[in-house]
Length: 179
Image (cartoon, rainbow, N blue to C red; front, side, top):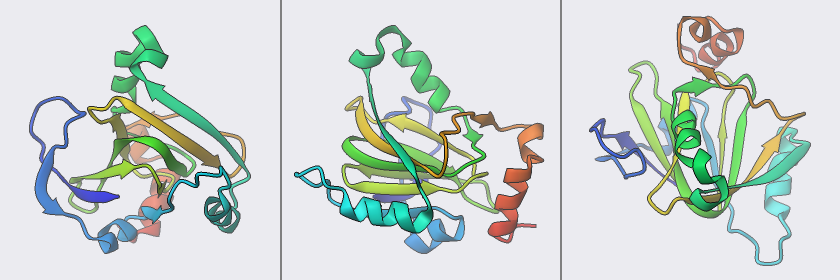
């Protein structure tokens, strides 16, 4: 995974938008974002992913593929909805099996966007309550394993007054010591 500050320039969200300012792993850790690089096994045995899942209490998983061909007429609207700034009330865990894309996460306390460029073999954990968004890159394909502690919680809570006071958001801010 490569992380850098988003350049904030207008244009296609699927472009790099690389400001040239890299983000160090300590910064990501300070906002609760975790990352491992685990090469995708040719034999389909995900022992290293299973070890992370066990350590973090993930009990369920599925695999999702996002492509223009697979989503058809829904592609553009889905991509736009993924790119709306939002949070979840559960961790978001993705292990990239094929393709690539970007998760943008908000840094604190300055509210800058950090762009995390994910490729096959990257496993990322976003904490519950962090504001983020997702987009594919110009290749327009990603296949990812999604891991869950319990049953999947898909509800995105778009950023606004209600989410700023959401208990999961407040717990997240406490966990990173933002007052």
